[in-house]
Each structure stands twice: as structure tokens, then as C-alpha cells.
Amino acid sequence: MQISSKQPNIGTTIFTVMSQLAAETGALNLSQGFPNFNCSPKLIELVNYHMKKGMNQYAPMAGIMPLREAIAQKTADLYQLNYHPNDEITIASGCTEVLYAIMTAIIHKGDEVIVFEPAYDSYVPSIELNGGKAVYVTLSPENNFAIDWNLVKSKITDKTKAIILTTPHNPTGKCFTQNDINSLAAITKNTGIFIISDEVYEHIIFDGRKHWSPAMHPELKERTFVCGSFGKTFHTTGWKLGYCLAPKELTAEFRKAHQWITFSCPTPFQYAFADFLKEPDNYLSVTQFYQEKRDKFNNWLKPSRFDWIPAEGSFFQMVSYKKITDEPDYDLAIKWTKEIGVASIPISVFYSEKIDNKILRFCFAKDDEMLEKAAEKLCKL
View 1 (cartoon, rainbow, N blue to C red):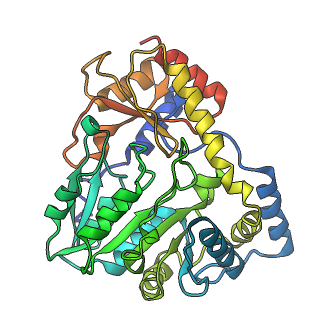
View 2 (cartoon, rainbow, N blue to C red):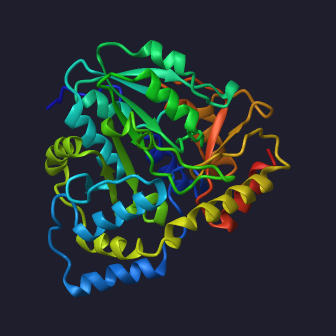
């Protein structure tokens, strides 16, 4: 029996394709964004402690209160932003679920959502499955993926329901500045446009930069959904826990959708994170940890023929291979996984029109041995 597909042009994600190919060929997997090292032993001990204590049944739909209180405290300490843990913070099954629940809550048929591309691959399907339409603002490597806010303004229509942002950005590693946030506030002033801010890499930001969330601007906070992740910060991507920060009225609608998608999230993990967040160094130290990995990987790549600008944030480094070959990036990513044993992600997959700028993305959330071996192979090209 045939199903009339709601997503006829969507296949298996590039992350699944490349990770599977890496596994089949024994290649070093610098494609999918997950660490190949373990999380803190203390965090594992905390999960075990709470499991043995009996915290193994359903958590409240919105998440356990100690974790919501810990997130509220962290957010206030770092950004001077106040979110009430009772009705403005919700625990969800990772940022992908947060994004989908937001779209389900706010998008009506025919609504438009402005998307900056290259864009993480779950954004557009989440928009379209809820009856909306993605409107693209294409960022270019020629100006280091900076945003032309006049161009963004020209894309706004009476159908614009939301603008989705990512900072630090995946896949480019670009970070928003205070000027970017001010520009966003200016072009959306006196509108009802929602801001959806994917901030899963908020603690992975380099060279002394400051993390700027749209919620930090008084004109934007009341219509901004902030999407956060424990997986990226604490090396626990397989635990699938994230959260949404939003004003009370927005959170109420978000929860209406969330309750039908996952309802609640694993209870012992929540208690473990609530305890772990009590020590700020557990998240504040992540910046230096990943900056050292970025710097090591880039230094090991110096003898190569690649060109790149060091990532400003995230745990991805994009490199241009124009001096090596003019082959299509997708074909080359497959070829090099098989032939030299290093898996990457072709950046064209993050563009609606599959724009090929001859750029590959490597994940440096790997142990030093893997990064050095991968760089050694890449330097021989």
C-alpha cells in the first residue's frame, strides 16, 4: 500500500548517511556532531544515584522543578534574563523536539518563516509539516557568512510568522553580535513576528566572544523562544534532553504541542542535570575545552591545502577545498570517506538549492588522537 508522502523530497539525513558510511568503511567519523569521548563520570554517578533512589517514573510534563529552577538560575547569572521556572521553562526531548513543538504551536497554513541558509536540516521540514513555508536568506562565504539585515527586511511580508536563528551557527560556526541583535530588533519592531533562537552551542564560543541571544534585547524577549541543549554542553547527545525558554503566554502554547509529542522526558537524567548545574564550572569550562580542540585541529591542518577561517563557535570547522579539486562537495565527501578514511559533511546539503561552495564541515568534538590522525590523512591530499 502506497502512502501519499508529506515530504516527497526528503530522504535519509546526511548525518545518517555519512555516519553509516564511516562505520561500514572504518573511516574516522568527523561528520555527525557528537563526541567520541564520554561525559563526566560525576554525571553518570548522579544518574545512577537517582535511578537507585527510585526516580524512574514519569516526570511532570514540563520537567522536574529542580531542573527548571537550576536553568532559571543559570540564565539569570549569565545573561541577566529572568524566566519563571513554573511557567516559562520547559524540559523537552532535545532541541529538535523543541523546534518542532514551537512550529506546531505557532505555524498556521500559509505562514512564512525566514530561514538563514546554510541551515540545520530539521528547520525546514518542521516548518513545512506544520503547513508553513520557508523563506530563505542565503549567506555566503565571500563575506564570511555575515547577515545583510536590509535583505532580511526585504523578505518580511504580512505572512511572516517567525524568523529562526542559530547562534553559534551550525554549520558555519558564525556567532551573532550585539549589532546583529539590534538590527533584528529594528526590522521587526512593532510586528508580531516570533523569534526562534537555536542556542544549543551557547557554551561553545571562542576567542573571548560573548554569547548574544535575541532574548537579551528588550524589544525581542517577549516574542522569543530560546532553544537550549544539555547534550551539546555536557557531551550527552544520546540522552536527548533540551529545554525551551519563553514568556508565559508563549510557553503555554508550546506546552500544548510538547505534551502530545513526548509528554515528558527521562526522569533520572533530569535530576542528574539539576544537581550538575549547581557547579557553574561544569558548563563554564566547556568553552576552553572546545577552543583547545579547535586550535589543535586547525594547527594539525596547517600543512594541508585547505583554506579556512577559524570557527567562532560550535564544534564544527568548515574548510574550503578549492585548491585541491573542483569536484562536487557531496561526491567528494563520499569519496574521501571511502578512499582516505575521513568522513565529513558537504555544506551544499544545508542549502535549499544545494549551492556548492566547495566546502566541507568537520566535527572536532573528538579525542585528540582521532583529530590528529584525521588531519594527517587530510594533509596528504
